[in-house]
Image (tube, rainbow, N blue to C red; front, side, top):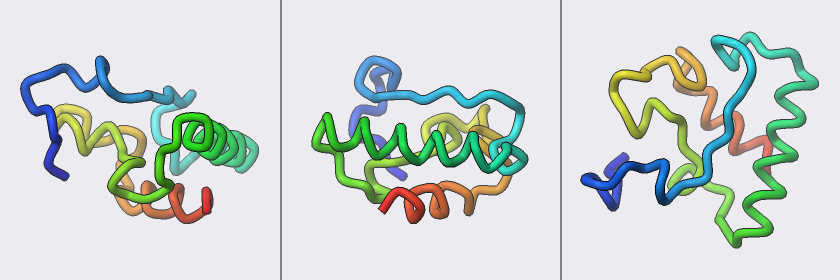
Length: 84
């Protein structure tokens, strides 16, 4: 992903969700279900499309967080799919 504002801290222009635990792939189903519901709600309230261009992992913003939200980088695709 290429950021549209590469010299500005993304925390200043993005909505961030922090998840409990070290790797989201190991999270309980209830936690993941709550995450999907939260993403859907935030997207609806802010008119954000539910797609991979708009829903991204922390690892896609910074290279020093390659494991965030998961070391399994296919997980972001699965999260977005579950939000549709």
